[in-house]
Every structure is written in structure tokens, then in C-alpha cells.
Length: 423
Ligand code: TGC
Ligand code: FAD
Image (spheres, protein in one colour):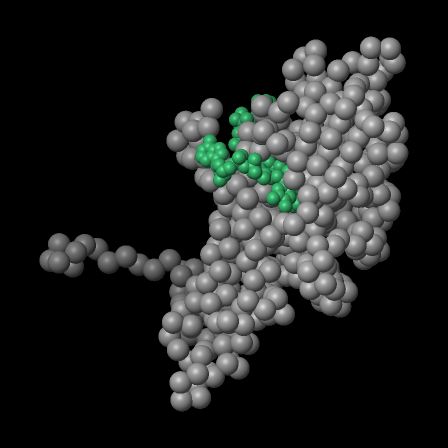
């Protein structure tokens, strides 16, 4: 103590005086929907894009989500509508796309998933995984052939990486591309892909397969209309207990002929699919926060209206308040992190591990908090009209696809220690 007192006193830096002066201002009111005023970090254009996306999602998607979820039906017109609003392939420059910032595309994703993760899934696959892949690795001819029509939602895409025996470990895939024995300039693709979003309705399938001669993974644009009968099937996988408003299926290929000009010309190995996944995982980090924010809004309203014990709103009780506090805190932190990653992405200062960190953390926090908020609704949580059970079931899937959370822990663990856990 004495020692501390005898130290020379630190003189405040002149700038800290300014900060101190500012801090005497009256505190601003707390906004539970955006406690850290994250909206102030967005540009006017980004806010306008979010507003446009929000109007479309609340006016056009929300009214049909319960029927879609109950009947496990995905209306492909949704992609056309999204195309009309300019939501598809939003960050791509040219080819009929909007050319927005990554933060603006994150805000779009957040609004779509505020309604339903399945609607976001259909959009992410189209925009990030397929259009993004074509934009990054395709030839000019491939871009011109696919991007403008995909941006309008006239052509639907899907992304085939996962196989029945290889999910977390796509490097061991069995799908193979053999040189056509008689038709020069053609490959024959064989193999099975499973759990593929949009596959039953896809016009173009971005399929990852190993070239037989080299053993290297390459990306092929498989055009449904050019596949002879019996060489390609895309059966749906029905009776899912999550993501029921999206369409999921398989891609079964049996010597399916694909011209060499439909192969991505230069990218080889897992770098191809993982680069596409960087954008899609980034989008999920935003999207799941939208789903969690919807759960928060609904749980808060319910807690203020529902009365128990001496006619008190259950929002009066500390345990309920803690559930809301945890969820609001995690949603704010999650959005802030996603926004920062988006800015770094646009500045070319992104490490893929940043995406693993935000994808994993936001998905985990969205799932845990949504599950806890479900309790606020008591028995009514079981009714789908309260929407919360649907979000909880969906959020399990978001935590699983595009790299299950534990897999992202291992990616982070490798970056932290330099030691690979999954080899
Ligand atoms: P590893 O040795 O780590 O890497 C192999 C090559 O890939 C490169 N790479 C990346 N490149 C760009 N971005 C990234 N994020 C990259 N991560 C790795 C790496 O540099 C290397 O390149 P090169 O040139 O040296 O060959 O590969 P590994 O086999 O050890 O990988 C292990 C692990 C765990 C990282 C990986 O397999 C993994 O991420 N597994 C998860 C699988 C996954 O995410 N599947 C997603 C399927 S698609 C989907 O789920 C869509 S859902 C859509 C919806 O409905 O929304
Ligand atoms: P597995 O790889 O079998 O993993 C099972 C469990 O084991 C997980 O918890 C995992 O974390 C754990 N595990 C595995 N390896 C390790 C390890 N080394 N250390 C510790 N734990 C480990 N794929 C596509 O290609 N395109 C799509 O469009 C697509 N859409 C999908 C839509 C839905 C609705 C679903 C459910 C999945 C979709 N997927 C898609 C597939 C998805 O990416 C995979 O399900 C996911 O990557 C996990 O693979 P898996 O299911 O084979 O699980």
C-alpha cells in the first residue's frame, strides 16, 4: 500500500480528459432490441438493404411459414421472389447481382432467418455456396451462363459435398470423375451425395468429386437438363424433424456425363469447397442471430402478457428475467462479432478461423438460448403457433451443418496450438 502511494502519480493523457468529459452526459435509454446500438455501425445503404429485406420477409415469408413447415413444403417461387428483391448473390459484383458489402449480405441473412432457418438455407445455398463458388472459381463463360439467371431465381442451385459415409471428413469422399472412354472432353461422374439442400429442385448442381487419374478433388457444374435418363437422380429426404420449410435430398450419379468445360478450371483440393463454405458459414453466423432475436421478442411479449401467482406477469420473476438477459446479451455479442468479421472480410483481412469462431459460437448460443426461452411459454411452447419450437428444431440443424460445432472447435484448436486433432 505504502509502496503504491509512494509511486509518482500518473498524469492523465489529454485525450482521456475528453473522454471523461463526455462520460458526464446523461445516459441514453437502453434499447432491448439493440442494446449495444450496433445499428449505428452500419452505413445508410446497409440499413436500407436490411429494411427492404425485413419488409419482404415479414410481409411475404412469415405468413406462409407455418403451412410450409407443417407440410414440409418448399415453394421454389420463393427464390424468384428473393431474386426480384435483389437478395440473391447479393455481394457479387456484376452479372445482375447487387454488389453489396458483406455486412449488408449478413443483414439480409439475419432478416430471412428471423422468419425461418430453412428459408435462409435455401437462399444461402443458392447465393453463397453455388453463385459464390461460380463467381470465385468459374470461367467467364460459366459465370455468364449461370449467374444472371440464378440471381433472378430462375435457375436453382445446390452444393454436393457431403456423402453417406463422409460428412465431417469430406476429404475422404468416394465420388469420382473418370475420363469418358469414348467421348473426348467429357467426364463420367459416379457417387452419392446426401443431405443436400435444394437438390430435388436444382437445375445446376455444384458437385465435388475426385478425378480418377489424379485423385484431386474438383468442382463440376452438373446441369440437370443435359444428364441422360438414368444417370442422375435427386430423391428428396422427407420426414425431417427440423428445417422442414427447406427441401433436402440426395444426388445419385451413375456415369453421369459432364463436359470438361463445366469443371472449375483451376481450383483443386478441399480449398475449393471450403472457400465457398467460408461465405456460407459467415452468413449462418448472422442468420442464427436473427432466429434468436425472434425468439427473444416472442418470449418477452409472452412473459409480459402471461400472468401467474397473484396475477403478476411472469416477466416480473427473476428466473424469467435472467433467461431474457442471457439471450439478449448473447444476441448482441453475436451480431457485433459477425459485423466485425464482415468488415474484415471486405477489407481482405479475414482468417477463416474467425468464421469458424463466429459460426460455432453464434450457433451454439442461439440454440442454447432458444431452448431456454422455450420454457417461458410453458405448455404453449408445444403449439407451433408460438413459433419457438420451430426455431429450436431448426437451430439444432444450423449447429450441425457447414461444420458441426465440435469440428469448428477443432479448427480453432489447431490454430491455437498448431496441432491437428482430426488427422
Ligand atoms: P485441411 O488439411 O484442413 O485443408 C485442406 C485444404 O483446404 C484448405 N482449407 C481452406 N481453404 C479455404 N478456406 C477454408 N476455411 C479452408 N480450410 C481448409 C487448406 O488450406 C488445404 O489446402 P491445400 O491447398 O493445402 O490442399 O483439410 P482436412 O481434411 O484436414 O479438413 C478437416 C476439417 C475438419 C477442417 C474439414 O474437413 C471440415 O471443415 N469439415 C466440415 C465439413 C463441412 O463443413 N461440410 C459442409 C457441407 S456443405 C453444407 O453443410 C451446406 S448446408 C447448407 C445450408 O442448407 O445452409
Ligand atoms: P458426422 O461427420 O458423422 O459426425 C457425427 C458427430 O461426430 C458430430 O457431432 C461430429 O462433430 C462428431 N465428429 C466427427 N468427427 C469428429 C472428430 N474428429 N472429433 C470429434 N468429433 C467428431 N451437405 C452438403 O454438402 N450440402 C448441403 O446442401 C447440405 N445441406 C444439409 C441440410 C441439412 C438439413 C442437414 C441436416 C445437413 C446438410 N448437409 C449438407 C450435411 C452436413 O454438412 C453434415 O451433416 C455435417 O457436415 C456433419 O456430417 P455428418 O452428418 O456426416 O456427421
